[in-house]
Length: 469
Image (tube, rainbow, N blue to C red):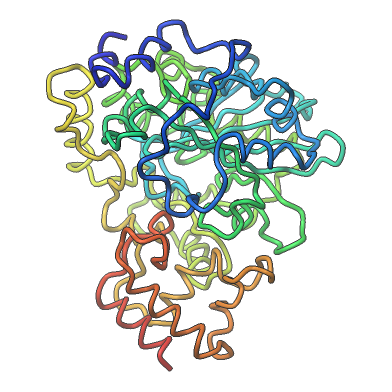
């Protein structure tokens, strides 16, 4: 604990570190008066137009929902969620739960994810008979931004409701949040306020849950997603359940290279992650999806890819699946190899992290743990288009997730449909050209920075030329 405490800002973050020692604030303590808190210095540009704190809490709770997470957060009094541990408690995931980490994500946060900064899923543990749990709430989290993705099943209809849980910390009020506050265990403690957004609230932003979880289009059933649903669960770890996998051998070692000295990751003790046998694994997440009736996944990662890729040549099966994402008919397929990172870059960043959290280097020296991809992985994960791609191909690949005609037709973004470029109005195309040229930090930039890297000059020019027709 002393290592993490050494990272705290002398005054603002003292409360965050003190709260950690007790294992998380109890949810039955008096709730914080959010009206006494300062404004957030630099709110997320995409969420800045939405209500926050108590106003958002009232708006969320004014529309009854039948899932257990909504019931937990909307029961009076408002729960006192001050860290990851108390969030897990409110979500009923502090006991009888399972977890899995992935070193390659195709989700909203894919650009931040590797084994050094993995995406964590925490979910109900199911029985060996794979019986559907009475209640189902699951959390998704990766360090780097102050939010948690949540899904909870309606107890009556069986439908899934998705939420974006955002939280504030003292450093948000004076602009002192640095890389250490986002990428170390500090991000998991000392939350001073939170705002919970429904899937409807974020529908017109890049946070849109339905772009992945409603593959059948607007008005169809929402689903849970796990593309690597079968053994060997190629990018999931730890994985010693039934049989230890290559992903466990490689990715667990990479994770521990940076995090062995930490206390926890996403509320899960590092010792539990390091020594897990069957509490944490892709196999457990598969069991949940099967129990939930979600075994049929769109463009599911074919487990034969691992053997083909091991043979030293490209995988023809993977290439077929990648072609679907290039054509805009599927979200990107996971990488065909276990490790998505550039080894030298990963080693440099892991060493920087270790030096900072142990006090061997100042916190200001921390290097970013996100976007550690090899150049090959950037292309194959859809973060950048293949070199030399045509303008139409660039637009189709990078824009289809949100702009393929399947979304809510009432939204402004529905006017831009990459599957109908030839029928698009001049006004809409000109707006798209403008947004393609927006600065990387702009919330208007297309594609959004969470979805893809800035387009290389040649591919940017090709996309603009296509839209200028």
